[in-house]
Figure 1 (tube, one colour):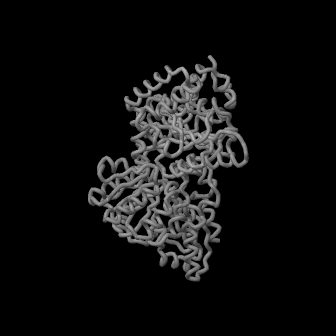
Figure 2 (tube, one colour):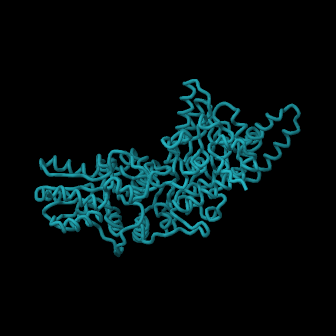
Figure 3 (tube, one colour):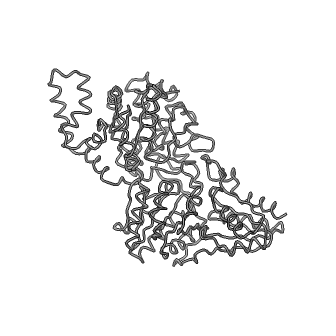
Length: 621
């Protein structure tokens, strides 16, 4: 039996295969993705849904001359396998291995780095316009999931593309689902279009009518089959994209290589902005992913035979947040839960189950989520906006202008703050302290453990002003969750140990590492004050100034960018008060951190108790 993956070194090799062989190749690729992700973790369901589409794209187009931009990038696994990375695919998301997203530094076939959503059409249009100005000739294809199409940036790009009329192909991968169930009128419209039996019947009749017209050539019939019959003989299909200046084709069965290759060959010959609507099934070919698309969107290690996750045990920070929010919402019906297409990932699925009338998933639209929350807050509600740190960056202006400027009581619960491991630089949440702490009217907190997270949420909801709480991905420290929750005095740190040689000011996850280091330093006769900072803004100025005067040695430790982070805030405080101390800052260096396990990454950049210990020894001499 031929193993086609063994003979595929580049996309050129698949062009020699017939349709039956391509189908067998699709199954090999699908199995390789399943087996690999079961060991490495990753975005399984999305990539399984586009295997045939990926093969068809590389079969019809001439990559890397022709450019494919994937949106969101986590659906690019089959693309990586076809483009010469099959033998390295077992290293997916591992340190020094393949990235889980397209990466220009990794391969010439990766035309543009993508990790966040809704960017592909803008990037593709830029590339297409550069091609035109350089008087070059190649195709540019943006593959965008319908979840990403809920992002406003997609429509900004579609609008300009229709105006410029450059040659551009946009493929709408309509899998009826992004991470959470897709939200909004556009998704409903697309779903109805695909499933409406009247559409199918009208399309059948239109094709039959055209086939009876002798003056229409075979090639023209094919093109009209894809576009004009749909537009002319169905009521609303494609009208939205037509009004934006695109010629609309589809829907095409995204798991039929025959249909996909035929459609792509046809539209490849056309000029101007083209949109091909492809209907796929997320998780296709692996029954457990088909049955639970959310679970298998982004999954850690699992058993292939059963689909069960290999659990590391213990409560996560996300779980702790979800429990606290539900409990507090039982006591206050003004509390509202809001997320941007991350219902399960942020833990708000539990809130939705309990309070569906007070829950809103706005889709991949972080900017809208923040201003929507501001509107609710202006009318007396207490919105809690749960968004990953790396995605909240997309709503910076709204945080400043619509929330903080008006001092509205919106609570931002910032999940995945700090390093996130295998998802890498597009998903590390290492800038939030830097981009939030300088905004007036905002209180900024970080818990030392999952128990303190609940108390901080209680505190945030008691304030009549904007608050942000940042907490990490993954397991908590294993402490017992207190009941009931209590408020914390705003701006007051927690002194965990006392010493006169060194003060370690630790933020969030670094508190536990600081305590371990202090224990070892004590064995060397170095007595250390370990402070759980809790509040990055406002700072506990009186405590920090007192420690600076008495110990003279201050070590700040944070899982955030050093530039503009907590350590910088301490230096600013000392400068304002004309206090000179020996200050050392530990944190994320001024570079993008690669992907890899949390342990390896923290070791490489020095965010471990051992490195804190070594720095402490040097400072205390």
